[in-house]
Image 1: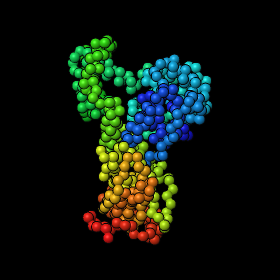
Image 2: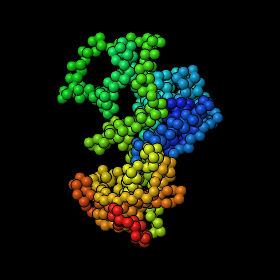
Image 3: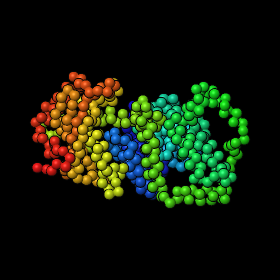
Image 4: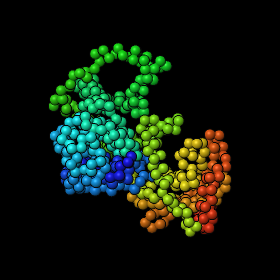
Amino acid sequence: MSQINKAACVGGGVIGGAWVARFALAGIDVKIFDPHPEAERIIGEVMANAERAYGMLTMAPLPPKGKVTFCKSLEEAVQDADWIQESVPERLELKRGVITQIDAAAKPDALIGSSTSGLMPTDLQRDMKHPERLFVAHPYNPVYLLPLAELVGGEKTSKATLEAAKAKLAPIGMKGVIIKKEIEAFVGDRLLEAVWREGLWLIKDDICDTETLDDVIRYSFGMRWAQMGMFETYRIAGGEAGMRHFLAQFGPCLSWPWTKLTDVVDLNDELVNKIADQSDAQSGARGIRELERIRDQNLVGIMHALKAGDDGKGWGSGKLLAEFEEHLWAKAGKAKVEVSASEPLRLIDTKVNAAWVDYNGHMTEHRYLQLFGDTSDALLRLIGVDFAYVEAGHSYYTVETHIRHLGEGKLGQALYTTLQLLSSDGKRLHFFTRIHDAASGDVIATAEQMMVHVNSKAGKSVEAPAEVLAKIKPIADAHAKLATPDGAGRSVGQKRA
């Protein structure tokens, strides 16, 4: 199976809680074991931030949130899971003991990943009966947004386990990269450790303060690394001659005495206090949850920017986000929609999350338009205008929209949308969409829209093909029997009769 059906998380701290959010928001039921007395509160706060971030991240329909269950024992948590993620504190004996417990209680075919940031998987799997299914799945914080997991096997880990783990991560929007050989700290943390160590020396020697150092990273190479990484960035720096020229030009710098990477800075009380004081001055006015929300919002913005590549496929994490959304839309397109002569199509069910509201706690205007857009996209998928259709060079473009705001969508409110096809011909679709309060059925907004079928490569309107028109016809025939909706055909400012 290339998907995770049931997950278990052992340890629910910063990393473990974010794994819970990643699984649950992908529609996977998660069982948790964490003896910490405030585990439920901590994970609940992480989930709230994750849901807010996902509300900003994608307009694709997420699956129903997976059920999150807190268990009283490790055995109860892992017994029926097919992916178990261990995220207990970074101490070898503790982790080894917990993993051995998991191994004894889990199903024989369950995958066991460890969130360690530096311990060797061979050391972790020493006492296991089924060591072939243990691997390091080293993520980056926040796990629910940053998509990478380094997959590292030990001496007894099977290749099939690593390939299965990589395949199972893709449907939840993660990028599993298999590291060829186990090494302390793996790849990412080795790079981070090098930059971190040099940064500590720069602070200790009063070359700069913590804020200046962070500014140097975020206003320069940090932006380049986000979309191309290190080696592809340096390939460009080599000009037309490429990487060979870059290495010839800058390679000699490696022998210059610029770096102190071979020396370890003494983190004595004086340096610790110096760094802590500068860090407090830099960002201490904000609480941890506020900083997490700011971080998440910035990461979402970067991923959205990277999603818009000139080839429509994006770069880096943006490309991965586009692929994840395509998976979500395809999944949503398989849902059965009833076509009836007694009522409009019900197409979208959702809830107003924290990312959709303004300072008044009400939905912002562009979120209404987003819901109307999601609904029209659902109609297009219903008639066969999906990603493959669009990539082939044809689509429907919206040419007119009239929105009425009749009520307020509020934080946490459950909503659904309905769509009534008013008329259609070979090129046009004219329809009326309502946003309803799910509890009362009351309409809080409507949109009347016109879409035109186009050849996007030629840049002109054309007749839709027969197979699309054939799928439109039963909807048009059924909806022809419905009463004209209140508000259809109205112009802006026109009063109700």
